[in-house]
Amino acid sequence: MTEPTPADYTGPRRILSGIQASGALHLGNYLGALKRFVALQEQDAPCFLFVADLHAITVWQDPAVLTAQTREIAAAYLASGLDPKRSVIFPQSAVPAHAELAWIFNCVARLGWLDRMTQFKEKSGKHKERSSVGLYTYPVLQAADILVYKATGVPTGEDQKQHLELTRDIAAKFNNDFGVPGFFPLPEPLTQGPAPRVMSLRDGAAKMSKSDPSDQSRINLMDDADTIAAKVRKAKTDPEPLPETLEGLDARPEARNLVAIYAALADLSREQVLAQFAGQGFGAFKPRLAELAVESLAPVTAEMRRLMAAPDEIDRVLRDGAERAAEIADPIVAETKRIVGFWR
Ligand code: TRP
Image 1 (cartoon, helix red, strand yellow):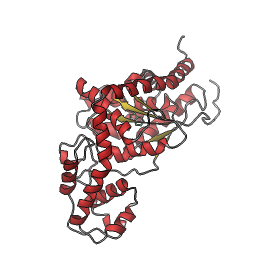
Image 2 (tube, protein in one colour):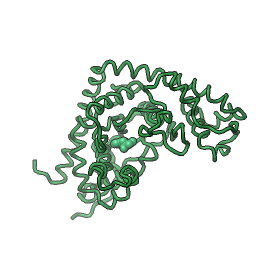
Image 3 (tube, helix red, strand yellow):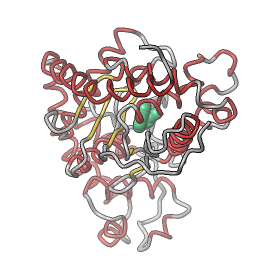
Image 4 (cartoon, protein in one colour):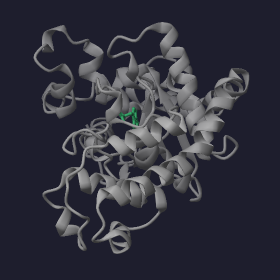
């Protein structure tokens, strides 16, 4: 084997992210993902944003629900302000290159690397031997999603950092094993922009989640205004007034969460929110937060509802997106197969 020379990737910058097609979208997805994607769209690198339906089926999905949820996520991308002319919006399964590269990467990644993945441990819980093989190899597919476009920047939450590190390990090992320095980039997490970890409205220590059995714990993007206001009013808090400094929120996870949500919705810093509300109790703060949440989400929700009633419009965007995505991904997979030594 020839000694690989260290070289950096010098190709174009591309941004990529995905949202898994399981469960309804909520405020955490909006503030943590969608709103940030819209900000990134203003940068000069093209954005590839997909619906991760291949990832969704690592746990059981009702087929009809999966189709509907795929359209709902596409509708959320569009309703949040992503422009399908500038950004490439598509379902993962409609671009076969993802699955093809994932197989090759399954043969690059080591069992020991996957054994360390904390998300698998959390999701498989006590029933590891009854989990799907797909759930185990989920992070390898995620690496393929990213590298099949040679994406250089990936906006994701804290919980995906480990998967991104694995992606870099796979890219580096592939480049090294096959003696192709700089072939795959080592993608970086993009953490700038408003990216609060939105927590449950019932428990400030748990992430807002589509799998929480209590619907009161989250604000769904398809909730109507009255429901949103009621959920904010009933959110768990404490009897203390809001403090003057961020440190004053340290032992108050529920209060901290509501302040963070307010800040993200209003595009303010948390310090600015506290400057406005310090000394006031939740009796005063919650109605203002409810108003702000309804006001911010109403246009998104209304556009999502309109699109969901016009599935043809969504499908046109997805089909066009899949075609444009494949134009980038197909030559990269063809080149990868040539490097691996597959007959052609
Ligand atoms: N695993 C990601 C999540 O649960 C979704 C995802 C799949 C993703 N493939 C990706 C995110 C590629 C970024 C890049 O949030």
